[in-house]
Image 1: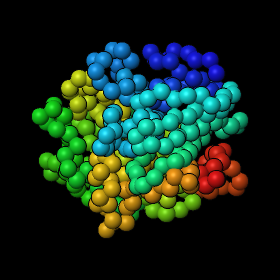
Image 2 (image 1 turned 180 degrees about the vertical axis):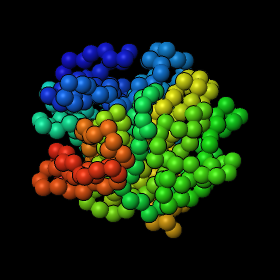
Image 3 (image 1 turned 90 degrees about the horizontal axis):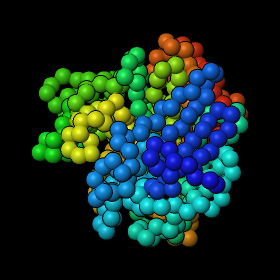
Length: 365
């Protein structure tokens, strides 16, 4: 597959009638992704406010490339892990096979030692990206996840965010933002919550996490643990469309909200990483890395923070990201359920369900 330069980084291109997606060989970052809706094209994934080469050379590759979605193994750092989020988010992927609507990449990871095969595919008639990471040869307990980052419009709204029902919700139990490093957080450290609509603030009172952008000048992280089901979902209602992530909660039990709205002022952030929202499907203990995730600190809350891998039993980690048009007054997504065949029914807070073509069964193959 021929490579092109997009936003300063060499990239592979996938395309069909409804979706055009770019993937970087370095770190396997997915973005930009253009979704065709009628006569308009929308691009929900964030690009960093700097381009590769525009920041200090000594920073890890992940920060140079930073965009869209990428796969992390481990999620965060770990002993002997060179760069944050591991080799899969920083190092070069090798092409195994490609077509206009499918790309298969491979990485032989040194630490933790394993082989990871990344497959991204499109399907005709679906505004969806199907992603699989097949992990082979890995031994022991590890944390991992996807790091989807959306960019919210400067004007319009309100824009809404929601998840499928969850049984546990908490603000990161130790400080996510360090004022000594010129980072600032708005939420109460360690606060637990039962609804995204009512989360404690550090200075008293509560705030809703169902609307975004919000709390400009702050950087916060929360975790919610999905209830069991055929699939779990995370959704953002943007400018006349919804972005939805579907996952198997047995594999990716939690969702992190990385609310990045200008709260980091050290290089390369410089207060310019605004209106970004990471909606990250993970198995891990917040952003704390491998060793803490292995401590199983959320066991009493029935939230797995690692999965066990066997070197002779490959494990497949799958997510689906999709976009679909909705009426302007659709509101926040409040329910997603199976439809007939390869479709889901998506209901907003202000209307009847809409049918969205997507093969959700892909999550269980």
